[in-house]
Image (cartoon, rainbow, N blue to C red; front, side):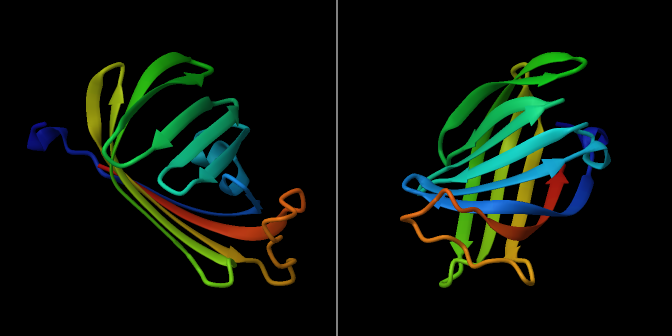
Length: 157
């Protein structure tokens, strides 16, 4: 990649979502919209022990798996067409607070679109309990989601 090809962009998103716990890990779901360039899309993050899966459904549909040391390929569908997306995670760090009411997630990865490297990316997500929201459900009852605030920052370069 040449210096002239360097592109940097960042986006801050503050939104509400739901957090639930199950036997396979933690699930965070929130809506993204036109401000993020995704139309009407529901995004779900599945935090497992060794990987994070991002699933988008709506105007944009995809499943991206972030797992250090492994490349995952998926399909990215938009109203303009479909493309193949390759994700190679170089760093994944997830810190869950002792009470389970806060999560700090940091992911660094390279992205390929239709088998061409497009750049290095990072996602930082901070989840915290919203004032007045219920405590997160215990593992035994994952069907009762709690309400959380989500503060995410994506850096693309």
